Image (cartoon, rainbow, N blue to C red; front, side, top):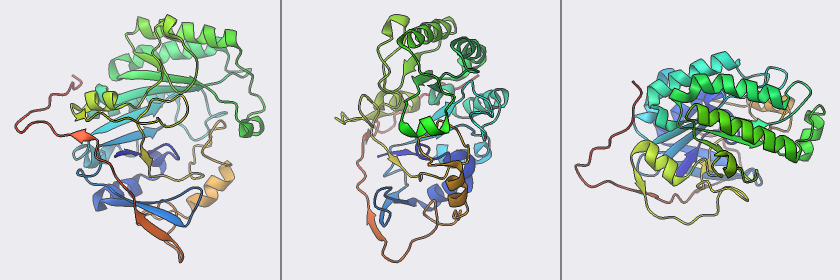
Length: 317
């Protein structure tokens, strides 16, 4: 089973102690978002977890103790750093601070385990096509030696976004093509493997690889391990990523990003955050009367290397 720590909330940044305790105690409880009284129990042991995939916009809080997880589990890290400031991402550190933290993470875990996510790409009066290309070029020059790849996607115009970001401008087909061509050229200049995430069109003509940012091939190569052949449906339509189990909860992230799909509102996230107990096996609150706790099935995907095989990983100099 692949564990995802950041699809529903920025667990690394805001729930660091809880996350480390869950792996230390060897299990976690997760409520079903659609049926809250259905609670799944996942065992978090090297025998049941094939890889732990992290997603965050700030790894600084966990860096001093990250080895408590990386010493025991194969891992992979998605680090989102965009062109936006506090007007769009109120709780996210500055670009400069974020790049420093990414480089520190890369030195600790190895560049082959770190991907830089430049997404979602959206347009406003302030964040134009030109500004995106200028900012991306500046970041690419710094981050290229420290990452495995870069992943980008264009913003999805779901209904909630119309309320949260009225300043948002539609991205035309011409805008997409101009951005993709420019991002592809910058990535090629710095030797960065650039790829899309989700259904964003075919930009292979600009050297951009198609979707599939968390595949078994990527996870295996990053950790020097192999997986058995496994047919799966992806995480959503048009996605080629391996299925994973998210141990977080919606409406809990305090980053306050205007484009966020996982929060109903910043106010609700702040209210829910007050329910958090680092000692609880649940991210929010505790088990309640009427909760049904079921041990979730956890498929073993990894094949063990032959006895005596030594894994060789690319580590930063």
